[in-house]
Amino acid sequence: MATGLGILAFTGIFLFHHLTSVRSRDAVVNGIITNVRAPEEGTLVEIRAQVGDFIHPLDGPVAVLNNDHVSTAGVKNIETWLQRRRGELGAAKAKLAQLQGLLAAAEADSTHQQRLEITESDRRVAAAKAELAAAQANLADAKARHELAKINYQRFSSLAQQGAVAQSQADAARTELQQSQAQVRHHQRTVEAAARTVEALAAEARAAQLGLTLRNTRSNYDPRLRLQELRMQIAEQAAIVSGIEAEIATKVQELAAAQQYVAQRQVVPVEAPVAGYVWHVDAQPGTFLGKGDAILQMLDCQRRWVDVFVDEQSLRLIHPGTKATIEPYGANKRVFRGTVVNIRSGLGRLNPGNDTALPIPENYPRQSQVRVEFDSSEHLGEGNFCYVGYTAKVTFDLRSSP
Image: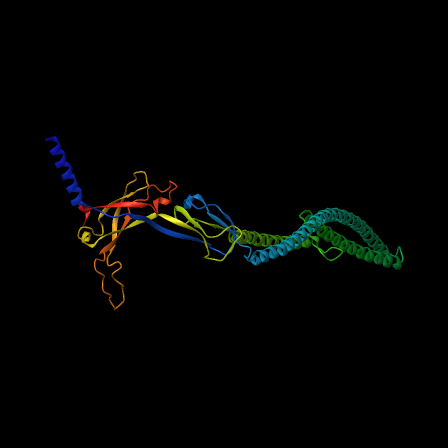
């Protein structure tokens, strides 16, 4: 009884799997080969991966090229320009320093000149005041003489009228009176002139105290004007120095960018385009490569598939989108999931695009190619080229057919 039940159960399971799945003959796991090419021409100096190595784009460059043919004319032109402008900057700074030295000397001369002018002005004012005092004393003496001459004239004139003295004496007294009047007028003018001189010299003294001048120097040139000219020249020269320094700073940045560009062109890192295994190395260190020449081949583990050949009668049950399990024989019981992506029939019996059809031999197998792509990219880095090349058993799950 138990044996019969076991046989029935086995038969039921067999019939269930037979009715809900289709198994293929052996298929081979396949994948995409991506060529890693030289982005620029140059000599291959280093390859950092060998056949069988699993590499990832984030691991860094897989190879390095050295391009000795990169033009450095732009860098040399900038360096020549910088050398010339730095020489001009040195000359401009030297001229600025010279002007600043002249300014310091001119400021010292101006200070000394002002001190001398103040001293000289004070001396002239003192001398003019002394002259004014002398003139005032002479005027006072002339006025006293005039008063005395006036008294004498009145006395001799009265005596002459009385006949006590000769008329000539009265005339002489009148002449003396007239002369004393003339002397008074002369000394009065002298005092007025001396007073004006004192006033003018006092004004010059006040101007000297303020650093001003009311008259020209012996050379007919005011040193303060030289100070103003030097300050203007220094400001202009400082602006020239600042302008050259700004130009040099800009060119230094351009030089750094040009040098970086040349360095990037001279040392060219080659990045891995995908994650996968090195399938084949096409070039060896020391080889000169042109732009686009192959360096190595990588197996793109992100896209793998198997091509399954089944009888055309099975296509009634298999359609694009049908799920499948892929079991590589040498993969230590690894089981992968996949999906049918396309189906191609007429293999060996059809020549597409040819108007002439050949007769099909009798009993020629009617097989179709069913491509099943892996659903995931798991189990990539196990040192087995992502199982590409492994023989696998593919089982279609008919329950998942659209």
